[in-house]
Image 1: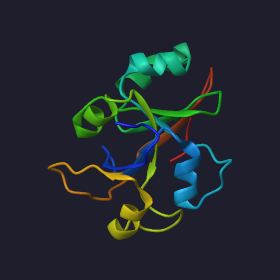
Image 2: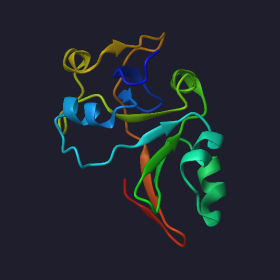
Image 3: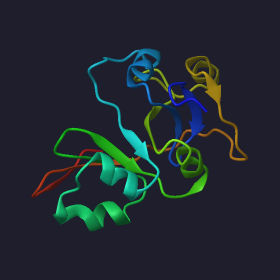
Length: 146
């Protein structure tokens, strides 16, 4: 499998586009290239190789489900630890992840299928549900963004 391709996947929260190419994801979503994209990782061990988690929030990050954390560096990561989405991510370790829709529009399978290189079908059908919650952390505080 090639991580630079764009994959249409049912994530643990909603239908998403995943790739190691952040620019390609921004281009197909028709959004500003300078806007950062969250990275989904397959384990806490992988996260530790990419980002330092402030000591005060290590337990919160470890125990959180369906939560994206924005770190002091400005990078956003979400650990996916179970389910089909985890199984898919496990093949790559880390991929950029974004919802499978044009920016500020609703999910449409026909549109999403034209935005990707590969559609990953599982026994779970594609369904758009609520996105992950987003928490911004720094060395001393935690702020809810979504």
